[in-house]
Image (cartoon, rainbow, N blue to C red; front, side):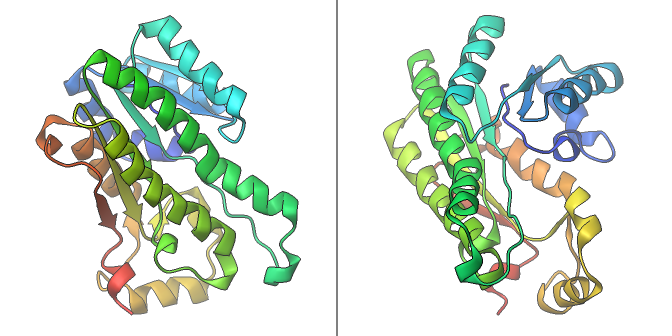
Length: 246
């Protein structure tokens, strides 16, 4: 299993159950983000605490060459790629829409979309040649509920949803490509949420709460496993009903 992940908190889960399920499947995990030291530390933790063979690799997914280097490194180490999870994301704060700089706009699209395209194309081609595989793109409800406060991010995630369908058609029938579309999820970013936002979530999400990282991981594990063998080109919402609640 080769996974591209931007958040160490989302890869192992708070209670270790996702890691144990990964171990039970016999997967080897490659954790990649621009923070190489964090990836190495997480890979060591997955191995030490949960018995999961893991490798941490530094990779800035907004850079085409870094994406190619990551795929080449995985091939050199393991000879194949069975699963790709595109989980990188960023949404910087800004003032008004006219205050969004060209640099910020390009950076948001590069991290959220460009890297997923390159990694999806490279890995999808390799998987198809090897007889099969699975790709999961982690999107956001912002893709279907865009607001002025995160519009570049929403545009990128909407593009990611389109990428899922295009890759699913390009590499069918042996490679399955799907999207997980989370709503507000309790990660390290949640530490910066305002009380107003927390109240907004409680009042507008039918589930009445934010999601947990393990709930998103559970959907990813399903889509990358054999039980999802007839699922491709699909979008699974893990948002407590938020996307269609307003």
